[in-house]
Length: 160
Image (cartoon, rainbow, N blue to C red; front, side, top):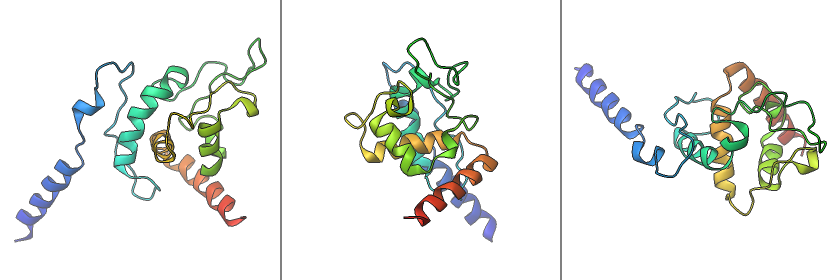
């Protein structure tokens, strides 16, 4: 009795979460990113935010941070101008050490104040879009890294 209902429900959920493949491969985009990565439900973001963030990351961030957010080689060594190159954002570098408020500020205002060369995106991305980019970035993080980040984020909000 429950089996047909369960199958119908799964089919409906699968169709609803499938995403628009045409949107993921819009003409003129340099980078194709995985937009249908499953999202762990205990995370703050939704699958829709990850899909939107993948597109925004491809358009705005992948040129420097790489299509899979893997950063540049020797990202911890300053260049000839004394600036740090783009770090990995895939959970292997320092991005997970910062609460969401700091991540938002760096995307919004850029990384020059921190010794990097990243421009600010406040004129190009809305606060909602910045959160979508952060959602896609964090969807690359394994569960251990995400849990460590979540503790840092919660502690930062508790100290206000």
